[in-house]
Amino acid sequence: MYLFLGGDVSVWENDVIGVFDMDNTTVAKATREFLSRNQKEGSVINVTYDLPKSFCLTTENGKEKVYISQLAPATLKKRGGTL
Image (tube, rainbow, N blue to C red):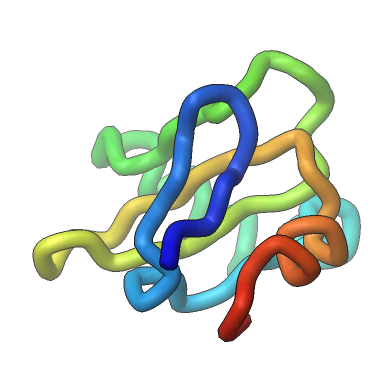
Protein backbone atom coordinates (compact mmCIF):
# COMPACT_ATOMS: atom_id res chain seq x y z
CA MET A 1 0.00 0.00 0.00
CA TYR A 2 1.15 3.55 -0.68
CA LEU A 3 1.27 6.52 1.66
CA PHE A 4 0.32 9.86 0.09
CA LEU A 5 2.64 12.60 1.41
CA GLY A 6 1.14 15.58 -0.43
CA GLY A 7 1.61 17.20 -3.81
CA ASP A 8 2.00 14.31 -6.28
CA VAL A 9 4.19 12.23 -4.00
CA SER A 10 3.41 8.79 -2.63
CA VAL A 11 5.79 6.27 -1.11
CA TRP A 12 5.53 2.56 -0.53
CA GLU A 13 4.51 2.04 3.13
CA ASN A 14 7.05 -0.76 3.57
CA ASP A 15 9.82 1.76 2.79
CA VAL A 16 8.76 4.16 5.58
CA ILE A 17 11.02 4.14 8.63
CA GLY A 18 9.20 6.91 10.46
CA VAL A 19 7.16 10.09 10.27
CA PHE A 20 8.33 12.93 12.49
CA ASP A 21 6.84 16.22 13.63
CA MET A 22 9.00 19.16 12.49
CA ASP A 23 8.22 21.36 15.50
CA ASN A 24 9.10 18.75 18.11
CA THR A 25 12.06 17.02 16.49
CA THR A 26 14.02 19.95 15.07
CA VAL A 27 14.60 21.26 18.59
CA ALA A 28 17.31 18.63 18.99
CA LYS A 29 20.72 19.41 17.51
CA ALA A 30 21.13 15.83 16.26
CA THR A 31 17.96 16.07 14.18
CA ARG A 32 18.97 19.41 12.68
CA GLU A 33 22.39 17.93 11.78
CA PHE A 34 20.71 14.85 10.29
CA LEU A 35 18.45 16.98 8.09
CA SER A 36 21.33 19.27 7.11
CA ARG A 37 23.54 16.32 6.14
CA ASN A 38 20.78 14.77 4.03
CA GLN A 39 20.10 18.14 2.39
CA LYS A 40 23.78 18.39 1.38
CA GLU A 41 23.71 14.82 0.04
CA GLY A 42 20.66 15.62 -2.08
CA SER A 43 18.37 13.11 -0.42
CA VAL A 44 15.81 15.64 0.88
CA ILE A 45 12.70 16.05 -1.26
CA ASN A 46 10.29 18.92 -0.60
CA VAL A 47 6.79 17.70 -1.35
CA THR A 48 5.33 21.21 -1.15
CA TYR A 49 6.34 24.81 -0.72
CA ASP A 50 3.86 25.33 2.13
CA LEU A 51 4.94 25.48 5.76
CA PRO A 52 6.42 22.04 6.59
CA LYS A 53 4.78 20.14 9.43
CA SER A 54 6.49 16.77 9.17
CA PHE A 55 9.22 14.78 7.54
CA CYS A 56 9.09 11.17 6.47
CA LEU A 57 12.24 9.05 6.50
CA THR A 58 12.32 6.22 3.97
CA THR A 59 14.73 3.75 2.44
CA GLU A 60 14.24 3.20 -1.26
CA ASN A 61 16.48 0.64 -2.94
CA GLY A 62 18.83 0.80 0.03
CA LYS A 63 19.13 4.60 -0.10
CA GLU A 64 17.86 6.94 2.59
CA LYS A 65 15.42 9.67 1.51
CA VAL A 66 13.73 12.37 3.55
CA TYR A 67 10.43 13.82 2.37
CA ILE A 68 9.36 17.19 3.79
CA SER A 69 5.56 17.43 3.92
CA GLN A 70 2.95 20.04 4.77
CA LEU A 71 0.77 17.34 6.31
CA ALA A 72 0.76 16.75 10.06
CA PRO A 73 2.15 13.43 11.32
CA ALA A 74 -1.29 12.52 12.72
CA THR A 75 -2.83 12.99 9.25
CA LEU A 76 -0.18 10.78 7.67
CA LYS A 77 -0.72 8.14 10.35
CA LYS A 78 -4.46 8.08 9.59
CA ARG A 79 -3.72 7.67 5.90
CA GLY A 80 -1.24 4.87 6.43
CA GLY A 81 -2.64 1.43 6.99
CA THR A 82 0.34 -0.10 8.81
CA LEU A 83 2.12 2.95 10.24
